[in-house]
Length: 369
Image (cartoon, rainbow, N blue to C red; front, side):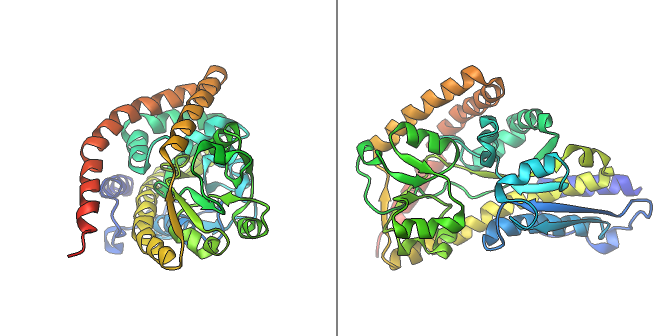
C-alpha cells in the first residue's frame, strides 16, 4: 500500500476511535520523500496548569510518533514567546505556526471569538463537540477564522466550570451590585449589566487580589486547578455552576499558510492528534475533579449553589446582550443562531435521558447503608 494511502486510512481510523495507542513502527515505513518540518506551538497557559498544558503536549507527541519524527512541534508555555492572550495574533501573523488557546481571550477584538469557547448558558462539553463535529459548528467557525488566516480545531474542554470563590454569600441579584469579581468575556458583560464590577486578572494575580480585598470574588476553572492555586485559603464560599462557562472549549489554531503547505499525511496526523487531545482533556478533568472537590470540602470549603433568582436574572440579561450583538455583528449572529438552534434540541434530549438518570443515581449513591 502506498504511504499516502496508508497514512490517510490510519489517521482516519484513529480519529474515529480516538485511540490511546500509536501506530506500531512495523506498520509504518516512512516515505523518504516527506520533508522534515519543525513548528512552534504557543500555549496560553503556564506549565503549572498541567491538564490543559499536557493536552497540547499530547498533540505534539502524537504527531511526532505518527510521522516518525519528521514533523516536530515544540511546545512553548505562556509568556515565553507571547503572552497568554497574544496567541491568536502570533499565529495569524506567523510569529508561531500554531497555538493552543481559548477564543474568548480575544473577546474585545470581536465577540464572535467567544463562540469558539463558550458563552453564558451555552453548550456543555458534549454538546460543543456534537455541534462542532456533526452540527455544522466547525464549518461555521472555520469560515469566521479564515478572515484571520487561521484554521481551527477543537482542542479540549474542562466541562462545566465552578462558579468561583466568594468572600461573602450571594443570596439574590442585589448581592451582585458593586461586587468586584475577576471574570472574562460575556460573563463579565452579563455581571456588569447586573451591577457587578468585573476585573481582568491573570491566574497568578488572583490569590493576592482576593487576600488583599482588591477583589471580592474570582472564577478560574474547577476543583483540580483551583485547589492548586490555593483560593480556598482566602475565600470561603465556592459557588456552582459557572453558568457563564457551561462547556469552555480550548482550540488549536494553525496559521493557514503553514497549514496549506503541509503534506497531506502531516495534515492527517495533526487532525487525528487534535481529536484525541480534545477527548482526553475532558476525560482527565472528569477523573481529577471529583477527588479535588472532596479534598476541598474536607479543608472547610463551603459549597454554595447559585440561587435560582440569580441565574434567572443572569439568563434574561444574557439574552438581551446576545440580541444586541446579533443586530450589529453578522458573524456573531450566524454562528450564535446555529449554536442556539442545536442546543434547543440537544437540551430536550439530555434533560430527558442523561440528566434524569444522573439525578436519580446521585440520590441513590448518596444513601448510607
